[in-house]
Image (tube, rainbow, N blue to C red; front, side, top):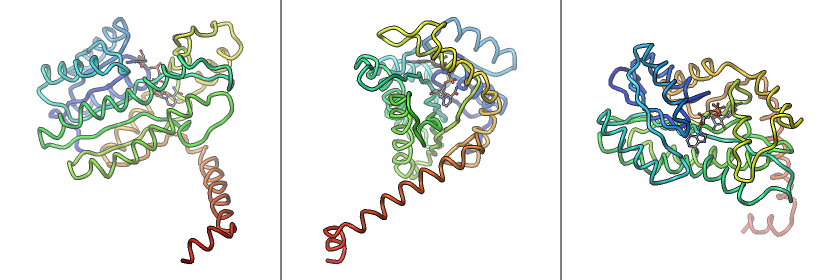
Length: 279
Ligand SMILES: NC(=O)c1ccc[n+]([C@@H]2O[C@H](COP(=O)([O-])OP(=O)(O)OC[C@H]3O[C@@H](n4cnc5c(N)ncnc54)[C@H](O)[C@@H]3O)[C@@H](O)[C@H]2O)c1
């Protein structure tokens, strides 16, 4: 889609990290920005930084897991800018752990933010975008963790695979309304995402915990959020669906697909399925 001075973008988790970088990249093309986030102090700083770049920006305090707060944030966006075109469902948190030891409270916390938060964005904003007829675009932030899983981060993988599948389902549904969908799938990006695990309901590990330190090191070695955001916005302009940022992980995608294909082919050897397919 075309992004210019007429475009209004709503960005969750927009006060920091990838969300803030997206605000900057969209704003530099002229878009007006509404940031939604849990962190008021960070929101204030973000609006100041955008305004300093002559980007028209406002902010609303909002927990994406709370439907009422998301509806209020949508209303605040319409009240301020009249309409909305781009919705970046970007807010997310990290949670790992060992199976059998993860509290259900913590599971619900990550699902409510990483998945239901995206669903709130889509359900609440779709009619608002459809109502003006100018089209729009959803950018749903998943992860490379939504395309392949490793041990230790199962709840995070579960939510990110869900966001990929959800976005694949949305794309054909929204196409007739001229609403594009992209799913952003980065690997490591240099942000504060590792700190979010400290906020889980049952309390996080301390900053001195070796697991926290290891995650901090990996995240610290990641891409610059501004580069991720610039590529993301180029992909939105080109209406690209999957937004990947780490070409070095292409082999992992090939391996996963080869495993799926091998197990799929195996089912063709089971006699009952051969008969069912023949009849
Ligand atoms: N950093 C990475 O390596 C990486 C990689 C792949 C995907 N992602 C995804 O990118 C997205 C953005 O994360 P980030 O890396 O910029 O992290 P970040 O922690 O730097 O920024 C996330 C922002 O979301 C806000 N937030 C958290 N919970 C919220 C809630 N319930 N409601 C509203 N706002 C909330 C935080 O206050 C913060 O400002 C997440 O969905 C994350 O899973 C990050």
